[in-house]
Length: 397
Image 1 (cartoon, rainbow, N blue to C red):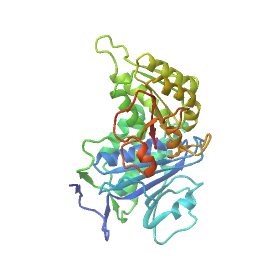
Image 2: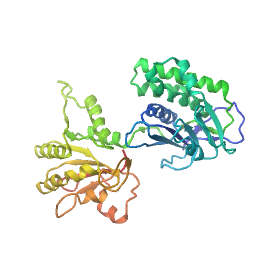
Image 3: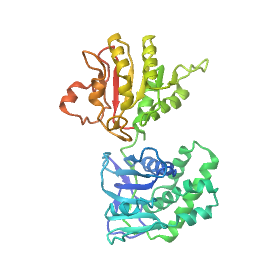
Image 4: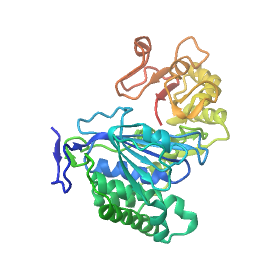
């Protein structure tokens, strides 16, 4: 049973909404908002609140709009939903539509330098003097754009009553304990928090409160990181990969975690090998060669890479060479939409080899939402039924 620990409120509000709303942050890609967004979601998670995050961004083109959605659900619902109660606007290119997307009764935190096209009477607005606070911080010019995002972290912490100790811990974790960036960002967070406390009347209904009963014994982790951890602790000995969005962070995660835990206790030498190949063809060729030699070999790619690997997969099937191929799916045919996830590769992975049978596919063990026909042919439990190549198909990065 979950328990919400709620402190007495200083402002009088008719009815509080605690730990059950959506936060949407609108920024520009390349502005450094990933750090501030990660601080928010990690702080909420560490307070025991069930949260889930979703990043919507363009194909890594700096300056285009990006959004980060955080759902809080005291009942533990983690699926993304469309309704937005708390909107944080930091991008002038989308500010009009972002403000219009807020639910009636919701709140908008916005950079006061942005134009407000329509002052809705059913929404509460909270301006943030981003430019003035950044100027007062006296940070180097080349860092001002990035540090500006810490303003909405501080203001949101005051209005929603996020514990500042958790904000500080999330910041420390994000920068790996490096003193200089921690101090610079923390000073901006506290300056924004103090300004909001002094200048804003917190008469809006949305609050967070520490909870128990949900997050204990869990990790706040994305799909690629979970896959990387699984590979490291299940004993992979060889991986070859070629960078492709949205799968690259899985191999990068394996590089990071394996370096920490996969070393011989006496010699301190690595007990694994990870190679960045020149393309997907080379990657799968190395994986099958390693598998033939007895290594626990794997690779990670996306739809276009699966297409390039098809002939090798067929060869591996007939030669009965064990291999694991992670397909971190993107949307669309051909090169598709690299920053949009999908499930369109399930059949392509299933029939990916020029073989008389099909490749064994594994899917993340959550609630399956594939068709009944597909479900009969996909493997949900663990364990491969034969020695031939198999494909691990993931639907999110």
